[in-house]
Image (cartoon, rainbow, N blue to C red; front, top):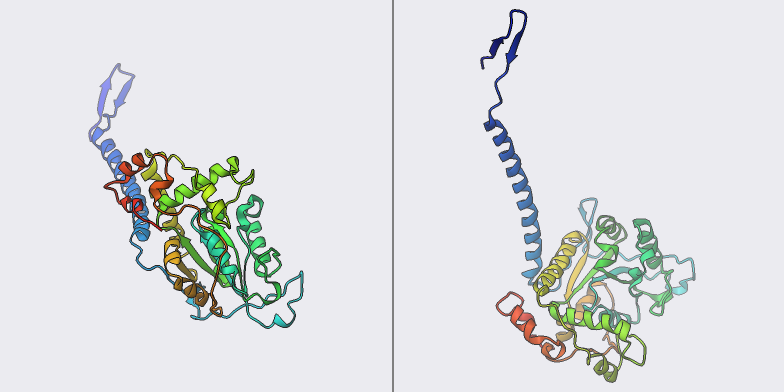
Length: 342
């Protein structure tokens, strides 16, 4: 492009470069906007695909052999032979022990399910150990806690000590599990930990249970004490008298978030040896408990729990602003939550 030369005097020459064309700047801005748009769309598509994964999940029980350094492990992984520091296993020292963990969300039936497992003479499931924040404050504390459990040195009322054939615990998704999933997946695969995912299909009922439980933490309806789980019909009826008011404005967004959380957890742990259970299926079909015992390579027994369900019957009986909730979910993909009755 030619340059313009201006002569001001005989001794001064000023060379002016023509202004840059705005077309080039516009092209740069356009390309930048397109790149950003493609990136944002790819993130959204990933979230949609993950959410769809659980919405259309048709198989309730899935077992996937874990991967170890990229190699598929045997379908029947061998048990472990822990040497506890706190006691001697005695004659049971030669009996193999399976490691497991129950991965779930609060008020999804995990307490009831764990009590069923603990009714097995050879199962020790040690509760919600990562409810205490200091046990999950970093990866080191998480690993140290799991090592203690799987070495049979975690003593609780559920511990079968010497003759445990399977040992594990409950872990809620919001207790450091998702944030540290990479290290935890590596630990599960390295130590041979089998994961049992327990979800609740009807997320509206889960929400009712969660709100009622949160209310009772302060109200303490049972003679001034708070109980997350009850063992008598009278106690269950007392707790069910409270009917929460649900924010219908944010209800759909809440249900979507819960679905996405569960789907994300499945995607994080899909390389571990795992199975998926739904609370409703275990209630309606007790053969699912047989599937769990076979998954853990346990002798099959009849499992029992003394826990009593709190919110029975139609869900409309347990929501104060039922009409608002009904109108909000009518015509949506979550309308099915309005009709389940168990």
